[in-house]
Each structure stands twice: as structure tokens, then as C-alpha cells.
Image (cartoon, rainbow over all chains, first blue to last red; front, side, top):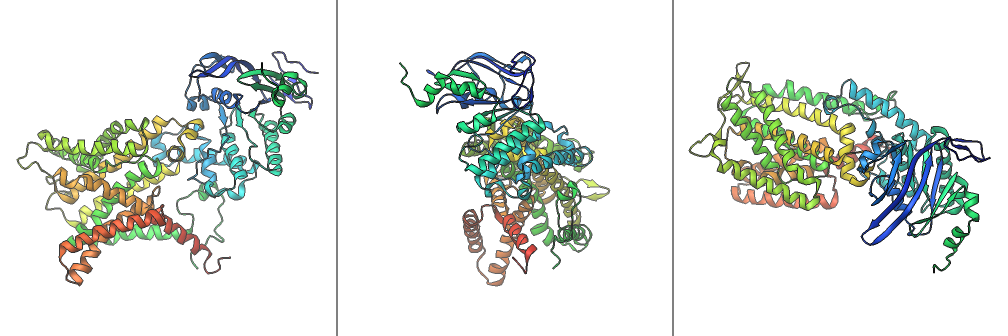
Length: 273
Length: 358
């Protein structure tokens, strides 16, 4: 059934997964003397939901920060869409079509939900300062187009009723959803989610799971997520990378990973000798 | 009962995003504009122009400028006085060097020159934030005042060290110099003020404004969604300084007529404009107007009641004014950090539902 060749493979539920979108080759990241990531390689394929799991301090978030350009690894290469990516600033990475959310929400508290989601469109803005200053013709037309796209995402994530509410007034679960909306508004090729379900109750988690699956299904967005909740990860993802102490100890479909001895040891805590 | 949204349905995103979504607000805005352009110029006298209207309009421009930088982009600046001085001295040099070019063009050019200087002093903002940036802009303030005092070229080697605006006309009417009529000076300031406020509103409602606010609220998150922090901060410095420069040019050429840099554009001016946006409301164009009106009117009002009405000595009233302004700033910072603009917003929210709030 599974065929992980260059052309991709077909998942158990019949979704077609494409070729390699992003590839990490032998990434090593050090902070002074501490090795956060040691020689890790894996790939993310078009249309896939890829999870990175591991115990606390395994280096998952560091990995995500390498992908989104916050950290530059000392060794290794990052390949995106068949090209080696030189070291970049995070805003340049964003312009290549990689969007992300944060573990502890990073929304713009002084702005309304609508404005927050509209900031997601900033990488697609083409009108210049003069156009915007006069607000006639091009800038205004473009604003309408962005608004229409943003409204579609607002509908999709069911946050119409809080459109004009200042973000600071929202409860936690909704903030997470607004942050997802902002990332989606950028129409990313690759969406990175850093613990999208952290701190949520069961109901909110189920909602979020549904949204993640729908996003993948409807927009065809490739998703790479970090999550602690094993049940969620196993249900959602097509392939899983398991990290422990900065090393990769497992990589494959959830069922396979679940049975792996190294993974079980890492989670149950066998002494490292 | 006029103040209602009910029945005023928006059928396009453009309608929904307009500046005054409620019809009543819109009509009031047009009415204010009509009075400002159509009535006041005919009834204005020297006292009203010089004591209230012209300083209000000029400070409103400066406050909008500072609000773009501090209120929208979150970069604290204490250099407003210095940047106003750049605008003033640039106008003076241009006026005397090219007497045949229209004064209005000189004022715009002075804004452009100030924008360039603002970008230069905005460069440290890429590395430092908050208090430290405030201190860096404070250095700009003192440096610029020192520069205009020390280098005689800036004041054309005049014996007094002052600059004074020669008479310049537009369509045969003197806009600067002692012979200019009050209504002409008022209209000049009004046109600049309305045009610049309109530009500021357009810039802050669109993508550039969102970039600024994103940088203000959380710069790391702004960067991750694709905002180039360098570009966002420097455009804020440039546009803010453009506004402040024009305010300085008008302040010198149209309002004062003659100026000495330390006295007219000292650190007190920086604080005055900063107080205006704090009391008026950070991140609000309306707040800039409200703050400017408040701080221009307050001394006039106090002077009229205390000196004129109660017969108190002038210096006592002046000191009392300082104390009242200081107390008000503290009250505002504690009670309503978003200033008069927020009070106005809350009042409007209440009014929409009045008299049935449930």
C-alpha cells in the first residue's frame, strides 16, 4: 500500500501525497556547548500532515525554529522546493510561503481579530506607499481582494462573530484559532504549528483537530506540527518524526512508530547508559 | 435617536471599512469641514487665529506625526522639537535661497528634508527599543538644537541668531511675514492639516498601518508573518518626521514669523507634543486632534478665568497650568491609558445603544 518513492504515496484514507516539499539534511544546532539538535534529517512532502513528537526538551521547537528561520543551524542544509535555502531572516522565509503559529500565542493584542488576520496577507501586498497614502484605485481594490480572502478564512474557522473584537478580550481557545487564521491568510505552502492544542480542553482539541484536517483537505496545505498529546498525533498525522535529546529516534507512519522500541523507551523513560 | 447603526446595512467590504461607518458621524464630519472652510475664514480675527486656531492646527499636524511613530509603530520619540526645528530651518533656507518658488512647495520640501533626517536618527531603532530609544531620540533633540545654534549658515549669519520669515505671497495674498492676514494664515494651516490627516488615515488603515501596529504589538510575530522590521520602522520614522517637519515649517513661517531655535523648538516642545498624544490617545488620529485642542485651549481657558475673571497674577496662573497638566497626565495614564480618543469611543458605543442598553 505504501510507496515512499520520489513521486509520493497514497495514505490509508486514500489521500494522494506528492513529492518532497522540504528536506532537512543532517541538521546540527548548538547553543554554545549545548547541542539542541544532532544530525537530524527528514523530509516533508506536498499535502502531508507531518508531526514532530518527543519528550520535553527533545529539540522539537528548536527544529521548528530552524525551519522558520529563527535559528541558523551550524551544520546541515535546508532544502525547500528543490533548492537549497541559504540562511535567511524570518520575514524572508515567510515570503517563501512558510507560515507558523506559536506555542504561546503571538497575536497583536492591540488590534481587532479582522486586522490580525489581515496582517497575514502582508506578504501578498503589491501596492506601494503612495498608492496607500492616496487610497484610490489600486490600494483600495487590493484591500477588497484581501478582505474577501480573509473573510473566507474567517468563515472557514467559524470566527465571524468576533471579527471586530479586540484580540486581547478573547479567551484562550479562540486566540489559538485566530492565530491559525492569520497563518492561513498568508496562503502558505507549508504551515508550521507549534503545539496547536496545548492548554486546551477536550472539546477545543477536537475542534482544532477538525480544523487542521479540513485545512489540509480543503486548501491542500502541507502541515508540519509539534504536539504532546499522543492520541491526537497518531490520529492526525501521516508520518511522524520522533526526537529525544536532540536526536532522531524514529521516523515513519504512526502505527510503525508506536511499536518502535526506541520510542517506547524514550516515552517510558529507560535509563540511558 | 440619530445615532444608530440599525437599518444602515453594509453591502460591501469597502462600506464596512470606511472611516465613519455611521451615517450621523459622516454628516457631522462634513459639517465640521464646511464650517472650517466656509464660515471661520470670514469671521476670524487676529486673537482667535493666533491664540487658538493656528496653534491648534499646527500642533495637530505634529501630534499626528508623533502618533504615527509612537502610537502606531510603538517607537518612543523625544525628538519632536528637534525635527520641527529641521522643518523650520529648512523652510527658512529654501525661502531665502529660492525666493521665486512658491512657499507652499518650500514647506513640502522642508517636510521631505525632515523625513530624511528622521530616517537617519531612526536607524538606532533597529537595535534598541523603549527607554533606550527614547534616550537616543533625546540626543537627536539636543544635537539638532545645538547644530542650529552653532552653525551660522543655518540662520544666514544674522546678528541675533534668529531666523525670520520674509514675506511670501500665494495668488497675491501674503501667507508669511507681518502683513499676512489672519484668515490666509489660518487657511494655509487648515489645508495642510486636513490633507495630512487624510493621508495619515489612509496610511494607518491599510497594509502599512498594519505593519506598524504589528511591530508595535509584537515584533517577533510581525517578522514571522513577513514584516521587514527595518523597512517598517524606517517608513514610520520617515512619514512621522515628514509630518513633524511640516508642522515645524508652518510654526515658524506662518505662525511665529521669527524664531530662535532653543526657545521655539526646545525639549519643552517635544514633551508638549508627547503629552498631546498621551492625553489625546495613542494610535488614534482623532486623539491627536483632541490632545492638541486640549493642550492649546487649556492655557487660554485658565488664563481667561484666573487672570481675566478672578484677577490673579499671571505667573500664578502659569504655574497652576503646569500643575494641572501634570496632574491630568497622571490621571489619564492611570484611568484611561488610551486617552480621550478611548473615552470618545466608549461614549459612542454607549450612545449606539442608548436608551436601551440591553
